[in-house]
Image (cartoon, rainbow, N blue to C red; front, side, top):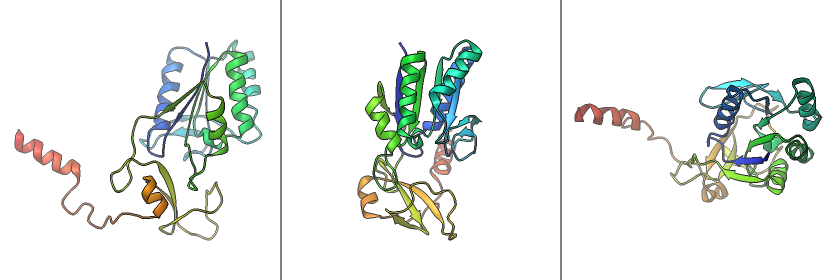
Length: 218
């Protein structure tokens, strides 16, 4: 029985890596599938922060995902799966199209995305996925806040200062402000606090220390 599975996590939790791995494994088994994304760091691709990437269908607001899947099934004889990265950016209607792909075409859908925006609120696509998905799975790779606690929120920084208002989707800042994102625990996201990293690297990285310790043991 086909399933709509929503896997969610913060930035840096490995969602895109997992999406690429699932697509690779299913494709190698000879299954017919589609890899999709939207607003990825690499246009028209799904890309992992680890440097792995693959060509993907760019999901714009006008794309009917069910009609796309139906066309693939008609041309290739069947469609077995969709892997959808950055699914938080999909429109709620497109999430319903994913559910219809599962129910009417019998294809599995693996959707990956963030839970909340930099404002601490559910994305519209995420909310709909939580409402209609057959399975909701938190990605188990835990990203960490600068303080060492488990990161639960994605903070937007403009010129180094955390902001809570602004456009939901920011690609290029027209006023040349430096826009960045940082993982934070709830406490530091709510307080808008960044850690003092001035001492970072002063006594060597963890990897350097580990290599030295291994050399001494050897």
